[in-house]
Image (cartoon, rainbow, N blue to C red; front, side, top):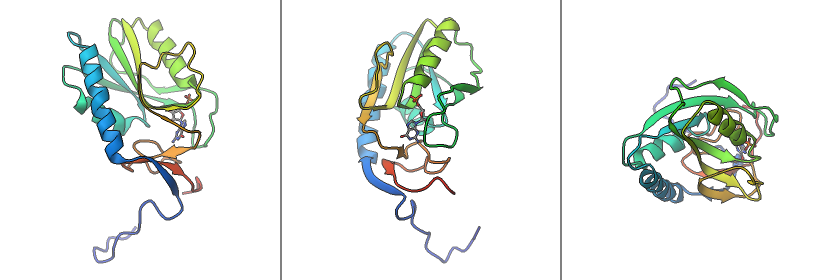
Length: 191
Ligand code: 5GP
């Protein structure tokens, strides 16, 4: 750690860690505004419960909530399916459940990316079992070619190719969530 205010900050992300920028900050912001409006129209007259699937949706949900004009409640749950590796472990685990009971609520699951769909399928079943009045999925990203048969992804920001992406909440070994854009990760997971 260095506290010098004289030296310029090193480049972030460091050279070679991010390849193609798939979605710029401007593209994301204008799409999020559209999604916010879409949701506010859909839930007129009720107060939906937005459930952020942490940690990847942290930035998305903060922007989405501000783009939502109407009463809305927010809660977060932490699930883990990837650990710190770049490939799915195939196992979904609820690390932290909601504080708010979902029974009788209109739940909107806010996700960063639907890849295999395993996480969303698990959570849809979970909230239906809890007695939610309705469960909708709003995902910033959906992987092109994802087999969504039987999986309702009601609101989608963008479709993206099969690269491992970082930024706007998405991490590589917990780093890069704070990038304002979505780009292809070209680095190593060693930090
Ligand atoms: P699924 O269960 O749909 O296969 O995976 C969903 C989860 O996998 C996401 O919430 C996210 O945490 C992780 N994930 C899938 N693809 C990517 C990716 O390209 N980048 C990052 N950072 N995480 C991903």
